[in-house]
Amino acid sequence: EQIGRALHAVTHFRGQLREACAGAEPLALVLIDIADFGAVNHRLGADRADAILQEIGGRLAALLPGAGVAARLVGDEFALLLPASDPDAAARRLAAAAAAALDLPLAGVGGTVRLRAAMGLAAFPEDGRAPEALFARAKAALSEVKRAGGGADFLRGAMLARVDARRRAIGCVRDAVQEDRIRVWYQPKLRLADGAPDGHEALVRIFDRAGQVSGPGDWAEALDDPECAALLDAAVLRRVLADLRRAGSGTGTVLGRVAVNVSEHSLRRGDFATHLLRALARAGVAPAQLELEIVETVLVDQRTPELVAGFARLRAAGLRITLDDFGTGFASLSHLRDLPIDGLKIEKSFVLGLQADARNAPILRAIVMLAQALGLHTVAEGVESAEVADLLRELGFEAAQGYHFGRPQPLPEPQPVPQPEPAAAAPCQSVSD
Ligand code: C2E
Ligand code: MG
Ligand code: MG
Image (cartoon, rainbow, N blue to C red; front, top):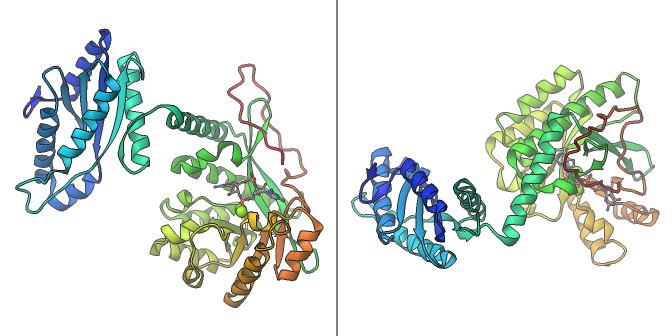
């Protein structure tokens, strides 16, 4: 059962945890995940990497007094369990000791390897009475800590609330996709020079099982989850293509070019451009009917050659690509020069604050001049009054969007929504749009 000195296997550990939780004595549980061990593995090869893990396991086991249990769970994950009258303090102490033990140079590996770790802490009984619940809590604490970039913490208070909110948001979106309760509402864009229609932006909405509508603000955490965001984007795109086909065949309103918001998570998945072009062809919708709104972080943080090539192909096919919420992120001027994009959509806070704060106008004027010089089209969103629309026209914006011109709305045709079910699920909140 033992690996090395007093380092146990996962089955033994689970047994010990069960036994300990059956007693009354408080316990400290520490889960340890070595940061970037994949890179070590890659650099040193599997055999030496494994020797390092053995060494680490020995060091961790050596931190525990006789009553403690140390185990290697899987790969580069370890666990420490220790009965202690003050389990919170004991868990923190163990975590600090483990961090120090990992930070010691490892001998005999041909160069110094110093390791860091993320650690999830839990105390019995406070964080869970059943062994599975306690372990799950420590595990969830570990993934939160990993998200935050390292360290050691319990999953409590604000962190627990955050995790719960994320889980709820993700559940809300996943269920909606699965049960076909995703709908797309369209908000008109206008050409400022003459008020002519200039297409629409597609904005996702969810109908809950009771028929209540909610928007992204109610489940923003779901959009941060890579899987969930990609799932949602795909569902939205299917709807938009279906709506465009309907509009194109003369039965619906004229949508013009439809701008869809695409999460960075969707763009990072496989060959986004190929999939999108195929979907357009299957739906019989011309690429020129579609525009992608991308937030600027994509182009700064994830600007891989593949992504840039994909954008270039989409643009060559007639799709338009616009940088959304421009002005809030970190896109530098050189990014604007180098990026394969067609336009800028200015973050609405500049527009909303245009009258209240005189410093917004010069910023907007400069952005417009820059865009014009680079041949990029400009859109302002968040236009709530005629006065602001006039100001934006004077500043040189080409197009605008906002409550003043029209709110996001479903297509006029009835879009059947599922009937309320007796066992109503946790409702998503409603929006006021
Ligand atoms: P966004 O792309 O910047 O969209 C504009 C947001 O401003 C929309 O909020 C819209 O309803 C709202 N808005 C429009 N006109 C006005 C106005 O005059 N005043 C004010 N105060 N607000 C206005 P919404 O629909 O809640 O969407 C929020 C964000 O969620 C969007 O911001 C976009 O980033 C994201 N989103 C929307 N649909 C999708 C989608 O299908 N996929 C992904 N990944 N994200 C989406
Ligand atoms: Mg947008
Ligand atoms: Mg925006």
